[in-house]
Amino acid sequence: MESIKQMVDVNTIVGDPVQTPDGYVIIPISKVSFGLAAGGGEYGGNVDFSECKDKQADEKCITPVKYPFAGGSGAGVSISPVAFMVVGGGTIQLMPIENNTVMEKLVNLIPDVMNKINSIVNKKMDETKNTESMDS
Image (cartoon, rainbow, N blue to C red; front, top):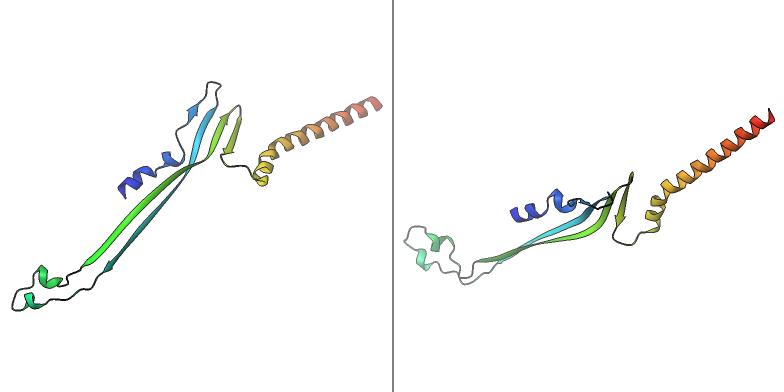
């Protein structure tokens, strides 16, 4: 468990930032999955209590079966990259490694669409002001 704890810290999920020569900072983001499994069984055999008669309780008398408990356990960890966060030029952009879905593309386009709508509205307002000032 201590080894898993060391592998799954915050620096594993959000990696160390890398600075590019043009001033951008790239931060890797990963997904960490882990699983644990355990199992066992008690195998019955011929019970031999003959050694326990007229003796003090010792280890042989506590577990007098020929085939005792057997068990095992295991653990696995998987670390896979998910995305890169790119910071620089006044923007923050999340670049997923897998192909973008339609919704992700639409969400990424919202800031550009809003800027274009804002510039069109401002342009129309300037035209309206210029037209009103010429009429007066």
